[in-house]
Length: 147
Length: 144
Image (cartoon, rainbow over all chains, first blue to last red):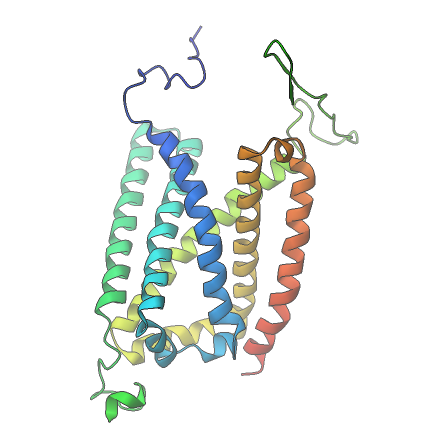
């Protein structure tokens, strides 16, 4: 019979190592509360105010990303949501994938895609130039760029 | 739960769910609010995750060119995608409200005991949210 370690004994690994599962558990709750505020705000401003989804185009997003408030709002959402989502998917992989090699491969894919999208999104938000392409597409960019 | 003088914890009597003959048997958990909130949390979480992967990529096109961004966002403004956005907001709304319910259950004894009532409160708030969102969004989608 397999001995089951006592609750809160660190899973029998000794109590000195960092309990990553505990920090993952805390992260899901802390990021979850922040994401409720950030994503509900994001959806309200993009889908409910004005003409909703019909108003979204290059100029709309460029206007938002010209403002440091929305830059940080979007970057916070990007990091918190991708890590929250990837950690949730890790839970599903642990629950439903029984072959160790497939499990490891899927977790490597999760870490890789999360790191790549966080790097891409953060770079886009902070290196975005609203007047990019002003010469090529004068009708599409903000009027301020053609002045 | 009440803690007695000796430090022993006395659990309240567990409600046995009323079931018909065709309901799953064997555990107290299967087939009740606890199971369905768990199932819906997993399904909505997975759906939102895959949308998020695509959404970061499509938004990144803002850095490529105005033409590329407007082309991809145009796909989100079609009638079919408009209905899909109702489903997406519905999934996000449920995942958010049920997530808050999970936090309450984790940290507050009253919520732990009344988790089934809280599930129906989540459903009620979700219905209110969707009644507020759906007509406005569909008008924006179908009037353009």
